[in-house]
Amino acid sequence: MAKLTLATFLLVAFLVSSFFFDATMAGSSFCDSKCAVRCSKAGRKDRCLEYCGICCNKCQCVPSGTYGHKDECPCYRDMKNSKGQPKCP
Image (cartoon, rainbow, N blue to C red; front, side, top):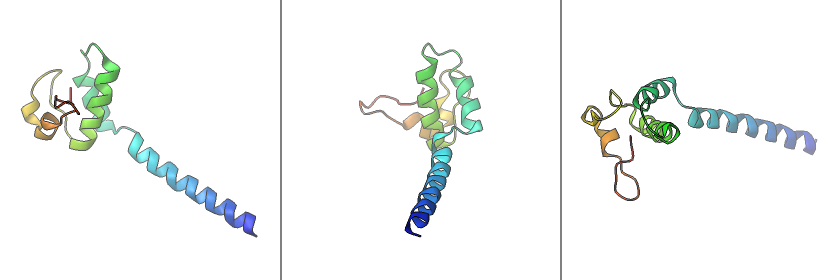
């Protein structure tokens, strides 16, 4: 009986954690498409997409175009890295 209870608990814990990680780790289609446009001309696309995704998930917006226009999204514009420089591409 104890083994069945433990197995059931572990199964439920695994299912709950998998739902949590899917929701937080997966990019939304909104952010993925907006960041693809924003980073289309970037020299280091992988890095651009990573930071754009972080900023988009937090701010729920991405400025239009491939560069500039950050006034369209103040949250995105105002995010800074640990060195005080702009975090979002």
